[in-house]
Length: 159
Image (cartoon, rainbow, N blue to C red):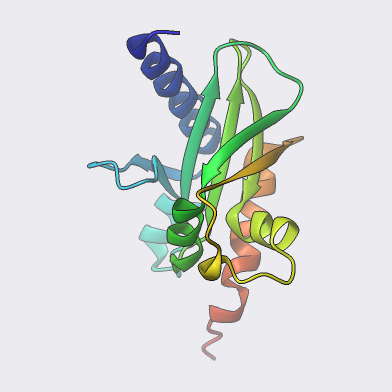
């Protein structure tokens, strides 16, 4: 696939992810310049803004494949995982497959918990690691739950 075709596939993948999140009530935006993440999203963002609720935000790195696939496996630079692990926001790696837009997702926290058991990510010397993203049964709902879990310890109850 040529450079422009690869870029078009990536743009389409980002648009599919943004549309899915928006349809589920997330406030979504692109990140520019590209610092390693493609999208940010806030759970029920418009309502949260109107009511002054605590912002539940996350970052998304989107990868897309032009062809339909049953599993989404990709090589990720370890330095990218380090950057995402250091983020105060939850970060998700999302794969979008083919014209139908099948979505695969894994949180960076889960990638680290599954693939780096007993290892300190920041001590690794290798350049890349192979990551398998899970097919999402209900992408927006799965992400919403993970974001809410991430922020549970920070929620204030003012009475």
